[in-house]
Image 1 (cartoon, rainbow, N blue to C red):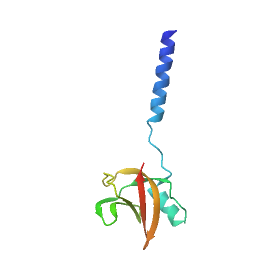
Image 2 (tube, rainbow, N blue to C red):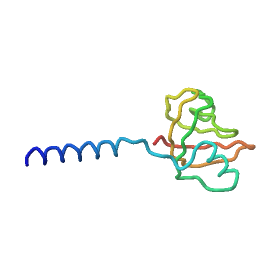
Image 3 (cartoon, one colour):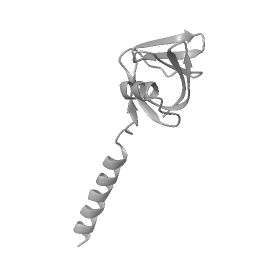
Image 4 (cartoon, helix red, strand yellow):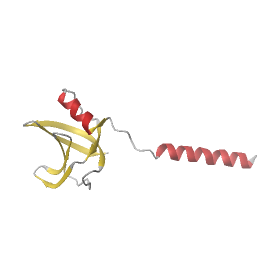
Length: 108
């Protein structure tokens, strides 16, 4: 009986650990976020899985990640990414500046 209880406890722990270790799924991909913004949707408070096209550590507005066609993800904290990386961010605000979007975010 003790062996069965022990095995069930171990199985439950493995199940819980496996379930909790999965990555969070973002609300949008980079492409979906850009389409949503272009369609006039508000994505503030939503999460985006950003694919880094280019990282500019010394951008005028802060650490800048270029993504998509016209997305500029800006942070005062170094996200420590490079081209090709993915990072999940939570959008704080979005501004349209001459056809490009400046998106302030916090790292998820």
